[in-house]
Length: 439
Ligand code: 5AD
Ligand code: SF4
Image (cartoon, rainbow, N blue to C red; front, side):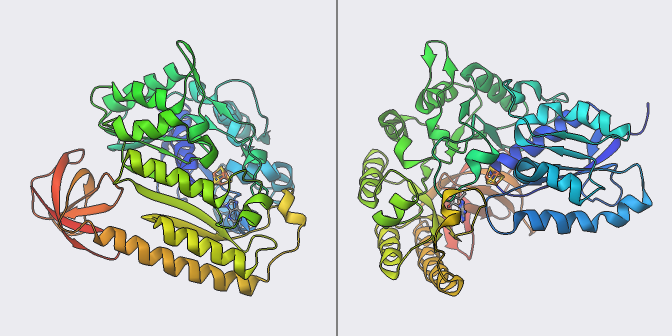
């Protein structure tokens, strides 16, 4: 048998990219590749890129520049660009960087094996189509390798909401849900390979409406089906849009035992004027009422969110409304970003906020969010949480896992294996994690 070829894959951006990279590694496994952790001895380098913010494309070009020497040393090395920058700028990448052999958009990953074969013959391979077929069905795992206890599973892709700042509808295309039976088969397969927690992924995951045995299924319906899978202990999902937070999903948070008490529900801004200009079709008040209903269903739920500051025409008053909303919700985790112009999106053409003003606002928002995160984390001290242990910690004999609320929890000096689910009494709260003892 010939030596396996080595694949180095670097992933940027969201969890969906992490999932996609895993699928690509598996797909190229069928072409005789094994993953390697350094680009130095690779036969193929793949950058799985993100286009959501900042100078994403420039980052890709500078990263590619670093591989020039490797390509000179090894002319057989193939270099590919995947992900959302590939989708947005495929032709341009091929033109500007002749050393790139392969460009593949997120909807075409199932064609990667044939594209790799084409690149091996010295031809350029480019595919940024939006084909009809279910790429994940065609990307099925070949080797049934053991998996870590927590896994991602993409159930929905794309977006039809067209928020004025966002590039996703253009890079990932229209909203599509995978059929429920395929998701359940994949989930059972993951469980057989050692997975105990599954996070269902989608850019608009709570808009899920995949085909089920009796017509379209809602996300809550899918979660209830997954709840029946023996050996699967925990279910999470991300990212949700406030407008798709259906009653059955809110109810599931109160009644479905495997659904974890954590919800990532981005609001982006607390100002109704800005929300309108963002084309969000909800108000600050309707979002706050929604959070109230979710907390009625599941009082201990940990809320998480995303914010954009410095969106075009944001005034100090608008920004203050965002701070007020954060104050009211008190997020356990929140991610805040300075608005970044995305070419081709509606907001790109509008009057921009002074970057220094936006920077100062971002710092103020992050200070408030960090204080809340810390308070929520500190409030766990003295409580008992259930931890899914994922890996050894830095100290000998220590293990790290995640609580129901997604806090990292360290436990020292106990007999714990990867994949164990145990009750832990929290003793201390550190900068980014908790420490405790087994009960
Ligand atoms: N600028 C800044 N942040 C953005 N996000 C999406 N598009 C932009 C942009 N153009 C943020 C949103 C979203 C998260 C994934 O990234 O907050 O929820
Ligand atoms: Fe980035 Fe969005 Fe593409 Fe994910 S879907 S990689 S967040 S641009």
